[in-house]
Length: 367
Image (cartoon, rainbow, N blue to C red; front, side, top):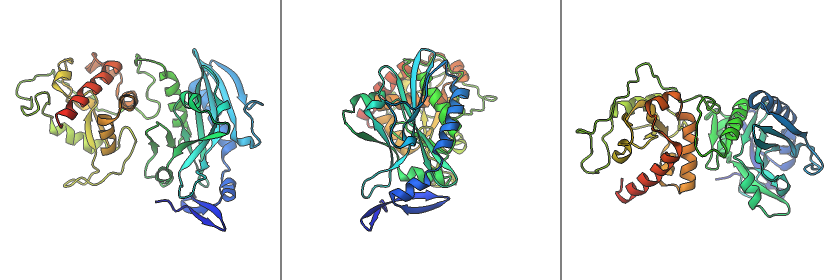
């Protein structure tokens, strides 16, 4: 529940200042936001260094996009390969609503430029440090927006701000793929990843995908993935369900104590074990009909990922669009050269179809 209150008919919102939660009005919050210029300068340097634009069209603000608040509309527009990209540098705001401490960006219709990829980087000062955020491509959002003023784009819950500020999570990602962290370099690397990946129907190269986080670090020195053998391993109750190797599940759970999708590290202590509980999920579903398409067993270390209970439910039960986004996002961190050596049959588009078919069917079977 939010602690947003009113004092002297003035709204107060929870914010964090040097490790302390404080109630602040709009003026106090604005005075706290001292990192914008530093943030923009560093972000632009990293864009040049990490993304390496092939051409810069605009650097700064122009009359069409300027605003009386000088630190609210700065942007950079550049080209990479055949892609036209605009990145807006925005100040993260309080909600403006009663009983709501969540944070937002202000987006305007005039941010929309035809046939471009549009991203927003946000900054929230928390005292001597600041938190930065990255949106997904905003083109569709801005195309649908018909308002004359601005639209509030919700970027972070206050709980996420707390988790990052107090070190409970290094970064968070929500269902809209808004990414938040203190690490600006990781933000820019993820921006580069989203630019590179956007619009492709299938990943064809995996050499530059270790941009948001490093690849899932699987120890391949002793990774001997056996050929699949269906003798004595089919679950006779669920005809297409295969019996898992619990040993590698337990080993994975001990080594990977973080949700690969939302980056949550805190769930609950698993009964009987002094570790956090996560669901261990086969990235390529370990299902008889799927397995028959692959030579190597899918019940292997390299095909396992940790998911918090909510994200595990989401990847099974979400609608086609959201499920597909999750599969794509996890693929960027799982699928590398070693993965492709083990599973050369892999195709991202085919995998998304597999998820639709397998999990819709298993719902009927009450998996």
